[in-house]
Amino acid sequence: MDKNTTDILEALDFIKERMATKDDVTERLDLIEENLKGVTKEIDEIRTEVREIQKHLGIERKIAA
Image (cartoon, rainbow, N blue to C red):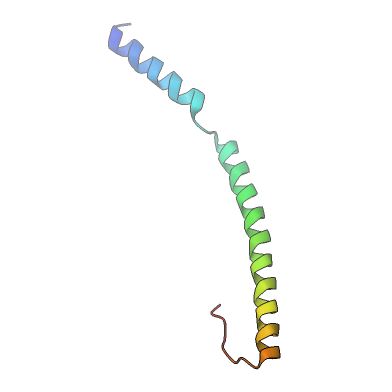
């Protein structure tokens, strides 16, 4: 092999060693989806609490959904 081919193969090996696999990406997306579900639930709970406080204070303003 010539020097250019060797350099290219070394660069490819370097990239392959550090590149995320499809399974890595899928696992990370699953974790993000789970976290998002939790955050969404917390936001919904906070909106409910704010509505209750507004009702108690006689405030008619709506929260944008």
